[in-house]
Amino acid sequence: MTHTDKTPFILLGALVVLLALGPFLPKWLFLLTMSLGKGLVVLGLVVLLRTGLVSFGQGLYYCVGAYAVGSLSQFASVKNALLLLLAGTVVAAILATILGFLLANYRGIFFAMLTLAFSMIVYGLLVKTSALGSTDGFNVAPASLLGKVISGQGNQYPMFALACIVAFVAAVLTNSYLWTALGQLSSAIRDNEIRVEYMGASVRSAIHTKYVLAGALAGLGGAVTALTIGHIDPEMAYWTTSGEFVFVAILGGTGSVIAPFLGAIIFEFIRTYAYQYSPNTWQLVLGTAMLLVIIFLPAGLWSVFARLRRRA
Amino acid sequence: MNEFLAVLVDGLIYSSWLFVIALGLTLIYGVMKILNMAHGSFYALGAYAAASMVGYWLNHGHAAMASYGVLVVAAVLVGLIAGPLVERGLRFMYGRDEMVLLLVTYALFLILEDVIKLIWGVNPYFVSEPYGLLGTLDFAGLTYPYYNLILIGVAVLAGGAVTLVLQYTRQGKLLLAVIHDREVSVAMGINVSRFYLVTFTIGTALAAIGGAVTAPTVSVVPGMGVEVIVLAFAVVVIGGLGSLQGAALGALIVGLVRSAAVHYLPQVELFCIYTVMALVLIFRPKGLFAAADVRKI
Image (cartoon, rainbow over all chains, first blue to last red; front, side):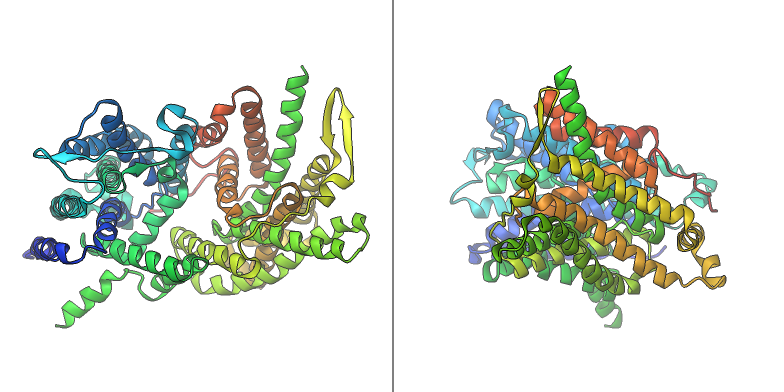
């Protein structure tokens, strides 16, 4: 295929713009950083969605990543931000590797239900674990990088910048994965698994790899979120959190690795402002938006951009 | 021994409650292949409708004993209003992938959660009169409100009625034909869209009944459908989606496991339900009573 993928350049442009604009948007920094954290989780979900799999349990890795950060910081006094983010990702990836052996056999609703069950198990465990703060969770101390404190009160820009860079790296790597032969198998598996097997590729191991990638990204997203908010609780593994990620993935679409971040930013803004102006109807707004997207833009908001670009 | 009996009875009561809700969910899935996330909202709608109608009934000095009838009427009303409305809306999505339908009902769930808040506000409702009215039963050293024991009767009645209709009436057999093969049923002149409408309405009413009978035992608050829906998912997935016996067995398993956990090891209450769900899915990937699938190439 002689296709030059422009996505990395667009991402680089977005990174530069965000980093440059950051200092002028002090009110939005927290919201944007949160969106980037969620966008990372959704990026992983998009990899699965392209394969035709919907996980209703990405909250599991989101939560595990966040708790890995929290526990390391609390009990082992690890303060290095990069080390913490790495730990969140690795712990989630290990868990996803173990569960992936099982989940690679499941499709459709049963995949969704089993992932849901796993995340609810972790939720049930955390709620009753008093050493980790039960339902209240616990606070995560500010992390540092190169000897400077970069998260917590008054340090929104450094954390935002770190989140931008992390999201950029993750998006570029995921994008290049999606362009590899293994990554391109996604839509083939979604269309017809048996033919993929006849071609000599292993559907099972392809799905396993994608699941681990999605888990690792969700862990990273959880780690970013833990450092940004400075607090973690078991709600992160509850099914409504996972539902939110699915929502954002549908909203953004699966057409590009940029879509999840776009979706997450739009989602956070809708939610924050809808919640501020009418706290009792924000879910109504979200639900309606989701219905409209499913009916009129089955490929998500990203498809609008893609269509505009094609016309240009 | 006493504790064991308590586990058994508590488990049965909890199972009955679960079964009524899961029955509607599995019925809708069996016929329409929609795993309805909005089912939790129908449950909450039933609870709210029952709470406000029974409250109104009692405030106007009507006979307290009749409030049980009001509970049922409230649930049936919710079924008759919300069921057809939502089914009509969903009609545009028929034939789409099961996962897309799951997501559509998730959107509906979000919408209905707020519709409930708009209608009833965010303050809790209490109507405990029907709960206390019947008194309690002392039995082998344990005390049970009669109300809870009636729940078991409601579940048996609901399950029995659905089974009888499916097995022994003409309409029920036609419905079985629709479940088996929708396309051929249409070709044979069965009005499938009417069956969809009726099934969805009955399923909705069952969820609402589940909510209505719960209303007197708890405070009715926003978000009460959120946990119920995943519990109902656990039940129907354990039993096998679309299977009635499956829903009954799933409800029994979840109910007894939870009640045993509550009595012997409260720390694992939530955790154990979903562990059972995961274990069943691991060893029986489509649930205990699922029919084998035809592999299509």
